[in-house]
Amino acid sequence: MEDDTKIEPMIDKDQMVLSPPHYASGAIETIDYIRDCLSKEEMRGYCWGNVLKYASRWTRKDGIQDLNKAKVYIDWMIANEEKGHKL
Image 1: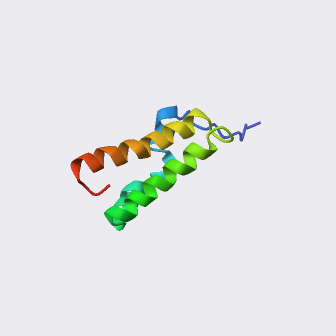
Image 2: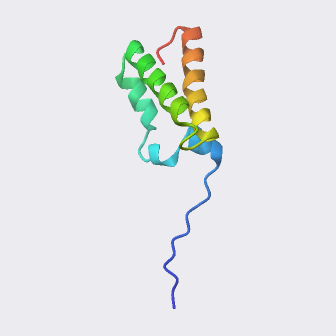
Image 3: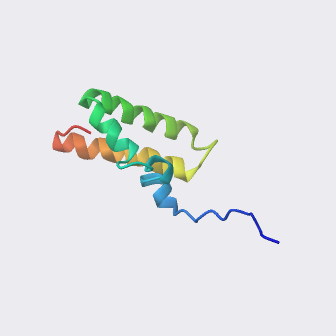
């Protein structure tokens, strides 16, 4: 008798924050496409909105993972503001 149970690969916690597989199914990651489509001001707003989202829900949803996601967006904002580059 065959076992039809699907075995899901283990996904590293850092990968789920920095490069989740569900956002990298095409030739480029979704964030790269979004960054390419938005103006600098729009991208700032997008990042800030995600900081607020993850920081406000971390105690109710994904805990430390949500804080790490908020940190990724903050780090992108800081690095790009310091360089004067589009996010």
